[in-house]
Length: 565
Image (cartoon, rainbow, N blue to C red; front, side, top):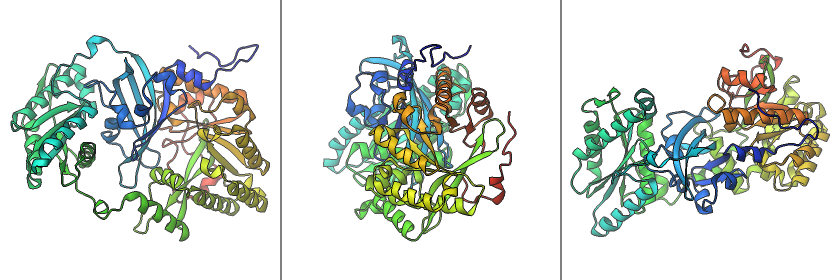
């Protein structure tokens, strides 16, 4: 059955993407994990209802809405995903029940996280979709040890208030059952619940009387140890790991071998705050999960914390030093035609070299540079490198990203016009990408800026399109050539009929506007086949090519990258 058209056959009435998103119960978001800042698409209130603003603005506060035992929160899904960000992010997906201002709903939450400077998840972008209301019998947990993350932090604060004044240490152990998603697939929901209960009992069996055990966030348990010296934490963790692994778990659906990973943090050595202690233990758990089964990692106070420094000041300073030393590079990710899979252009991505080798994580670096007011310096350098590349390689076609903060300043557009005037042939092979969010603050000014770019021969693309920030009225006034569909929607095509309908609708809108389209985050052939059938112009993602620093001469000759179908 084909999706309904955006357009009436006679009056060509157009459904706004924002209205369409709200009608299917979806809202896009981005999450700066380091600062815990959560940003939503413009239809958040329409989808989520009257959730307090303070909850919507913080990722961990929103995780506190998750009903205990109903599924992994977004935080847990990201930090237990087991994926690796190779430049385009790592996929996460979870399902949970949440209390949205008194309305309990089942939610599917999926997206990609991007690595930070420390190798851990730094940022995430995804889509939250309401499925249906929760039936009362689906949330019948009565276990006194069951809690959500907010309750866990409160319990830790209580323990700190009780024990630290008496000079007794408090240790938080976070223990996670390994490969819970696989277990759920093999044993089903009932079998997995039996496994979780058996793990809880085994942990209880080796606890001291004064210790506390709490189950939270699906596959995780928190164990509070009082008066546990730092040199005995590892032994305590090993005791819990061995208790779980001592024998197979028998369930009504079969026998399962269970392995545990543990992260630990101690107060007051590390901190005197409950939230900080829990997060430190969770970060240590992430290291333990990366190391494999039956592992325990103890959080240590970083050297920077002892000297009063921090990662962020070093990061932006390091970037500026690299800029001054001309250690800014471009990585090139191919964008190919959907049908023939031949190269159409490359997206040029910022890479900043580190003195000790490797590159700074762009996902963390770019937002930091924006906050520091430095991003325009790097956007100027990217433009310079791109124009040099286009001048040297006559067949090359590149797209570059420009930050909204850079566009707000007059010097970038003036620099672009000067560069394009000096090399008009190269400018005609340049595509300037601006994010959809950049268009909303002053649409009239944005239309004028984009027109100036077009007048110099370059093409214009709207990146991350689909969250509903831009109205169709403004889209018509922008001189755009390409719409790049937000990968948060295209990555779910295999699973979500709502996203299939929404993406087809966006493609139909683009066709109506007479512009080309790029589908981002294309990772498999089924995804590519559906998008091709619906008329997408170009594909971008790991299926057709990852970002590479070195671009061989033959790449620009438009060879087929992969056979279609």
